[in-house]
Image (cartoon, rainbow over the protein chains, first blue to last red):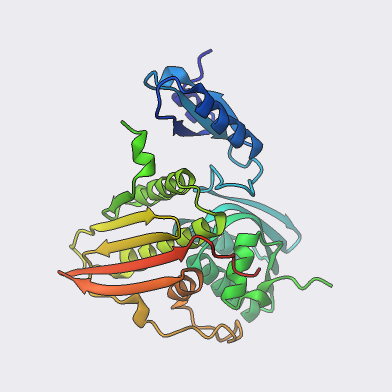
Length: 178
Length: 149
């Protein structure tokens, strides 16, 4: 079966195109492919999709491991996974908590609170991006939980999220490690 | 002819439609990758642009005015330079008072954090009102170390 952009899209695999300017410049193409593979990405040569000058398509499946060496290919999506044990609820957030992500996070927190959560943990190890809108959502519900004698805590932040919590004075939200 | 475009400055126009933001993020990643921008530089600029766009697109327009926001990105050996032009109400983000981050969570004011982060993560910020437009310029040195975690 031919690998096409459409087929990959249907499997929820994001496709990134890398164009090598010189026609038939396999060396440059291979160098790029090796570099991308070293970053843990899946690389496919899909010459049939573009003009004959040679394309590499770099592919990463959503939720695949994060890359420390490069921008994550699936970073413009946010994903929330919820688990609960009694009245302790955990939200595991991965991807990009931008303005749009912050709205999703807010909805998820609201639902968790209306489900009767007394303790909420927000796990941020997979958060590739966090902005002030995300911090505001956390702060708003942190206060709401305080007001109800409950807790909201952030745990295991990614370096990106940690830098933001630090520079904004949000460290008190973190679970204190003994 | 998509090839050479990777190496040119990036210009991106937003008109307030939701999917544009995601497309811009992708275009920015593409630009950062093509120019081999160091990770801390990418992250800082990504954040600063996100914060500024959220501010202008959420509060910068009177109802009925169609937003036209032009983002321009270029880089040389030392700097990443970002210019954001918008046709919204006069808005100087640099007039936002600094945020006192030592205020405890209970009393923390809810606003102003976005501009605070822009100041923290970028090396240069300047604002001008030019020909009915807000022009914000932001610069990030390519050699900068990430903020301490």
